[in-house]
Image (tube, rainbow, N blue to C red; front, side, top):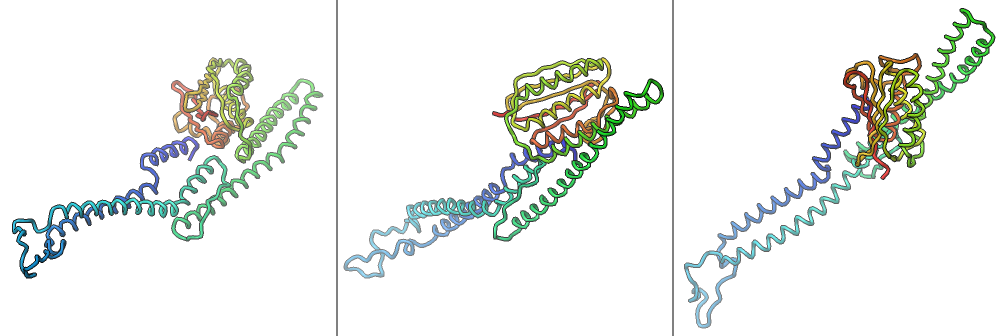
Length: 387
């Protein structure tokens, strides 16, 4: 699943969770409702049954008047009186209601403690999963001494995170080691070609050396980008407050000359914006967004840069003209070494969009890639402001 699809799935799950509430709340609410209904049924049953109990059983036998035998009825007894006095039924209802209220409140408190304690590993797993979504797989779920289905799930979740962490770490080490091993011979080859070009007159040999230098420069750029990608996926940097406006203005000034040289015009709508993150990674993200927008374009095309603090968050949008594409092709751009159509020049490594997606994922932001009407791409990065 690609980064945009993962973001949509995460947002959908969050909306469903917000609508349905937490599992513990639903379990506690269900148990309290069941307990209350059972108590009401018990109250109604007892009241109805007690309404037909003879008054002599409820209130005791009538008092024996002096000078009379115990077998007679009191002269004041009225055969028309109800079997059970009405005030006795009301008293029974009041006492039953008080007992029910105390039972529901105390039962809810006890059930809440039990359910919250039993489902605590699920909350820890949610936090660990959110941390893992930012490529940090070091979080683990604490497991208590009680063994049940929830703790077994927590143990399996920890094992899964550990194996994923080992696999991703091995992949990052391989990419970093391979890049380091390739960088030295490529730099040496570049120096040898430059020396040969300085001593070679114009002709077929010099043209061949120029082609070799271009190919070698592209390989050097690819290796450097692989190192950046491995560092980005490592997720070991320090977060700080970054003036995103300053970063965007600097990178826009650097790419403006390249855009003009290729016949591409740039328009800017940049407002104040401050975010929390890793400054080198944020600069790398902005650089690759603008580089892709200029490179995947055509002469006479445009690049539109937009940065605004929209209240609940910051929106960075880079739109460019270029070849028409489908939504599926726009999503595939974040795949490493995927090269889109409509390129200016022969540079590029096919890793720029993958780097952008890695930086966005590392910070827990959201990346949205959409085909631009009429051709080209719209890249949107949504970030929470530092406030």
